[in-house]
Amino acid sequence: MDEYIFLLKNSAIFAGVKEDEILTMLHCLNAVKASKKKDSYILRAGEHTDSMGMLLSGSALIVQEDIWGHRNIMTKINPGDTFAESFAASKTAALNISVIASEDCEILWMDVNRILAVCPSACEHHNLIIRNLVATLAQKVLLFNEKITHMSKRTTREKLLSYLSAQAQKTGKVSFTIPFNRQELADYLSVDRRAMS
Image (cartoon, rainbow, N blue to C red; front, side, top):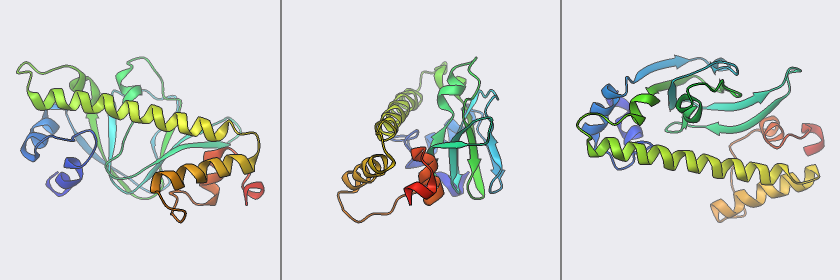
């Protein structure tokens, strides 16, 4: 895990935790590294998980798929981003999303129950990770609220303008790069790609 220590130290979940404490915490959290190839499922809808994932390398899409194969991209995740936290913390909830590798990935799996159960020594870095997890979940709620704002627009044009306007505000520039290709952006906004283009 030493090759990923800089990424871990700068991730939202380990923000404020020292390098040596991160390595100790990884052992405490039963952290396991796994690899997935491009276009393979990291998690599938309907499954249960007691671990949250953190992307160490590559990228992945969090998607909802219906029975007819239509997909709605919820978000794109990059190295340092976490996923499936809320499903892992809810012991009975089945995933209603799938996580698909959009390129070859390395994933770090961490047992959420080990995060939420304070260790006997009640170490400060453990308490910090709990606060970071809550902050991460709050940030995801805000991102999904933003997506709902875009999708609540009535026309494809309004949805696209809402999304692009939000991106311009985030970057503070009128010229910026978005994280999606055309099909992914259409899936994110739940619109027909041809109509959007």
